Length: 116
Image 1 (cartoon, rainbow, N blue to C red):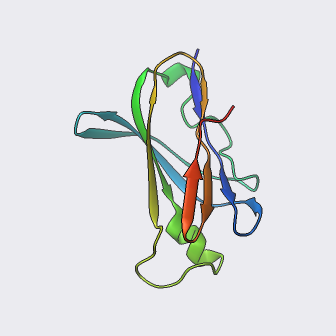
Image 2 (cartoon, rainbow, N blue to C red; image 1 turned 45 degrees about the vertical axis):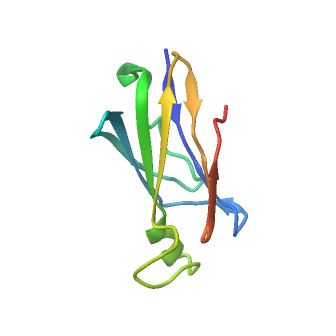
């Protein structure tokens, strides 16, 4: 059975990003339905898969990382308008497998990939 995990690394500070809220949405056309929410732990990971085997379905999804609060709290960004605040990553899961979608984050850059 498939499942989805994620984590966040603060590449500017060279450490895991703790305390980032993450929301997971199932996407169908123009419809977004929130199906999960989690917060990263001290290792920058969620305590459990953000989408476990019991709820896994093939399809399109979007993770939204609420990075702005973290960047402000760590003193890396200030002000009402940030370059990176809410970071969306839309992706598809086309087979029953383990999908790992990490976020590499700094105040002015981000990157992702399909991890293992």
